[in-house]
Image 1 (cartoon, rainbow over the protein chains, first blue to last red):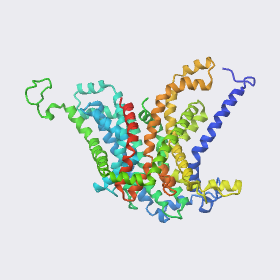
Image 2 (cartoon, each protein chain N blue to C red):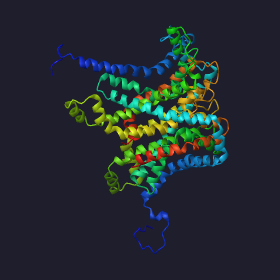
Image 3 (tube, chains in turn blue, red):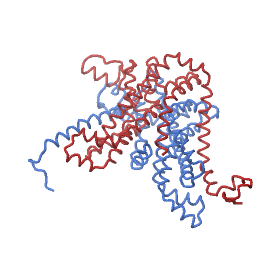
Image 4 (cartoon, rainbow over the protein chains, first blue to last red):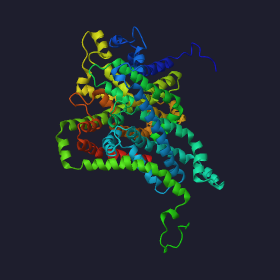
Length: 288
Length: 290
């Protein structure tokens, strides 16, 4: 292949590239402005934050210091709230994985009678708009005596995450050759041994994707957390962020700093597991 | 004692446990945790909620509440206009991101951010940008024109438009990604053949891209509509339903009644949405459970 000389310099290529840039630049700005605005507030001293500048005159990490040292009325329980978010997200991830993997194995590999019906019921749940289910769920958690208890949020999020988890895991299970199970049975393996030694190792990539999905779902959840938990030491970070707004003189630079800290873990997890996530989630969301 | 199913039908059926293979017993045991979750946190709440909303007086009260009518109209605007605009942009951008260029691949990595980060800090960030006194938008307007900018969130039409914008900002990356996957699945030689025949950009889209993506596109639009009905954050975090409760949608309205301790009204407002949601759900179930 010869290098393009000046003669082959094509105005058509330039036009194409320009057209693409005319789309790309607005897309970049549209995506980044709210996120950059949050970051800008986090690194601005209070007086700079409200000046409308695109870069602070004196960028500082002081806001982070205030958050990490809990030096503000709104931040008294920052670590407790961070911990709550962490524990709840981890618990939702583990419980969803256990429940959904067991169900998918049962429906897909053991072909349990009625499995298809359960599958459809799960799918049905997946399509109930989350905010609609929140209203009766809130009342039910009250009836169960779980309000203000972390279990209410954990169980609510497991309920919401499981249907999709079961669905994706069942799709993945169906692709595993049935001969594997048969061979294991010939070798005298019990059902549990097949599950542990054959099924789980082969399902690992899907399990990582689903675990990540459930953890992120729980970490990012606002509505259910805000309905089900209320005590300042029991709430999760997003609810605490929402509570910042209750005051008229909200410390916006601290709100944005805390928000930035809160947004970092999911973004990091997402990028770390991007390969699994994109494959797993897009395959599951829509089967064309 | 194991008895095969092909045995003599005249003997009384043996107890269930002995008719099942050990594998099936395990199957039921492993399915039980999900069934329990489903019964306790889906079936019971839904039935209980429907029972709470059963009195016709609830629906009369809703009918007489102007906020309910407004929320229903807002929801329709959100779904019919907002979602279609979003999906059309996603369809367009999926073509942009399908281009093989290094810088576009990098942009796609950044483009996913709104979807990857939680909504509360970013929506609050947008809310502050449009703060009439301190927000950066009105700062810019002031420095360019010398006039004070509008109070963005004080006009219900503008505020609802912005809530739709926030929703689009948040969920556009996901749908673009899905539609891009659909686009990349189209056989490239079709485009090459069209190129040889001198087809225009529009003809390629009209006769190759669209026919192959039509079903996917419609499914995505419907799924997005269902999920948008459950989207509480875009409206609540940006406008809180205000000004004067004029930007509520059904999902925030239900929670509003809940906060006012009117649980049966909250449930009734959701029941009113069922006739609209049910066909969407039915269609999606049919498509996915094939």
